[in-house]
Length: 286
Image 1: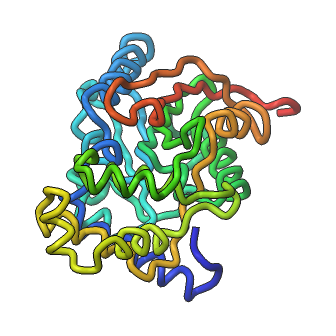
Image 2: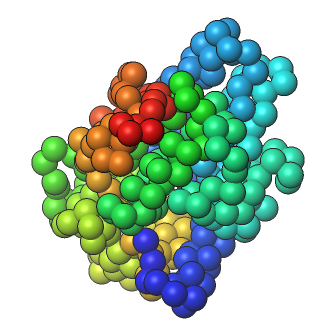
């Protein structure tokens, strides 16, 4: 979620160029673990057993999804908003990754059997962009096809930014990815406004502006902590809806999907990273 217009688009592109350069510093829960991948792998296996070679759509350039045990002959296509992310992160053939908007997928209707999205829904403004995303998926995924989403959802009880920082200084947060994740949730007051990434940077910077000192204090490498500078002065905002809100989007309004399964991983913060397995159905009146 960025300011509208060309200036906002330029800001968003620069943000993702920086993320691409720092990708090696990103880890769980912001990237999928073996538990998360097992859920997706089982869905792929079951699809292949029943229907043959799937036509898959990866929303984003999650490398772990490319390396899943796809059946021979499967078609795997990725779509990402930023060419820099495709160039830096996508491990597959260049021709198997398109630079395009998820809300306006340049794909034929019913051309994909399985759509996968790892923690990406919050990158879209709530509710309007997320509604457009649901409609785009409903058009592109064939009837009976699957959509698997790993979500990042707020905890039932929002914690304060101060409590997150206290855990950081007590060395109770293992990585920058965990720190970012918890501060997103702590700083978001209203899902329609989301959380400003610049506010995450500012919250950490107020603790200790000397990154070398802070890295030593929390037991991280300077390189690892410094990766948070991708958030500095960023105009990007993330919108993190509840799981109930996501279900409402996909199953009611605009709808077009039915929830088949829900999986919750057991790793730290896994309760806030459920994977929903949704099946594409006909909407009323279509």
